[in-house]
Length: 576
Image 1 (cartoon, helix red, strand yellow):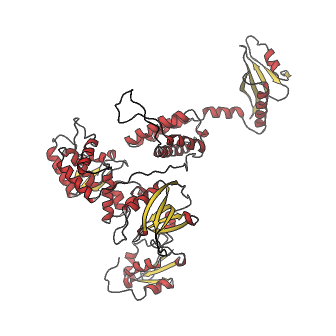
Image 2: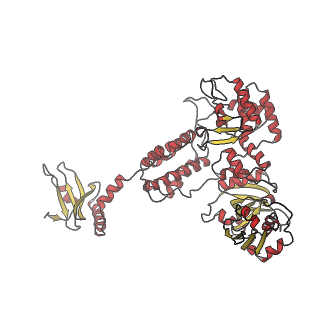
């Protein structure tokens, strides 16, 4: 049984090392608390205990860095943990072996980033190496808190001094002043959110501290070329001596393709007989095979390039380096802009212009997304519309709504409802867009207790995003909200059970329709079809039912039955 004494500063100072072995002096107050006297003269505090039948010894501090008093307090905490059934030594070892942020970063780069496009790979590596790793590399993954994320993003948003791009690339060039980079902070936040989501999947932590990070307002430029500017640009392209670069711009204008996709285009990708351009996954931003129809004008450019390009070259626009496509046309674009008297336009704005012209021609949201190669419908939303008769809307207003939804920022609109005698200014939190004959903006009215309302977009005379970001309501579901209505209009007074019956001759066609997300179809004995769902919007239902003539009967509600009575013709000859 080891001798126990009251450990004091004097006891440790006077203890004499024993040659050839270490020994312990146990404290007579706290069971297991001892000072270990090493043969070399060093002294440390230890704690002996039993856990699950095993004798354990934990060295937790050195003397004189720790005083006896401080060590005794720590020993008292350790004794309390053991009495509660915990194993302090195992917990410490677990922390030492726990993954650190650098481990997470290394695995993120190795397993996730490598699957992205080359441009994205370089961008994310730059963010991680310059902004994340230097601050958090040695921290435990579990140590990072929401506050840490916000502090880091705030620091990124402040910006940093960087070399002037306009000056020669040498060591003597001066740094330009600090420039705020709020958009960069948002991108870093997105990388962190993805990184911590993967950390959860990989068992490194249980929650994501980057979820719901504060997004700085983003106001990217939405530039659309006017018809007059397009005419002047076409004339400048015809007049320029570099017809190789001019061809790249023409295809960008005619297809809405990204300039990188056009630069790397190969003859083998074009099927001129079928009018199809097949873009390989390696050249598209979404890293997927993308097939788009091309016009006869584009086919003519391809045929012309085939005559001009050496037969052994696979590239539609071969570059100055043998075996490589054109690398850069920025100088050409600046020259053509000047010749066409077009200011403040990027090559990418040709893509926006292409899409806005599709909107003007009545193309659908899905069609535009496929033509532009968008994987997310939200990206295409700025060009959203629906084929067929529709109320006109301004691309600038749709662009502002789209940007406010992406950021997200509140939207300031000049709006006149059916009850207003004059235009009123409103500030709203946009939630989504309902597309129909009359498109509606779904938003929360900040001037009316954040009430959820629908605003007819054709009645919005002006719209602009503010610098006020807001947090989206995680409980709001646009699809569920839209399902309250048959079309775009909603009325609580009309929200009721709807029952229609289609005749046996129209039943087969009616089965092909999704009248409403909640519809229930019942086959009747005579071959007819019964359709039931719950929604509002009787007028829009009546408009639709007219197309079916006398092939449909309204069973309920009675007001809708009365609304269509007398208008169900039998001489239409066709059903929708």
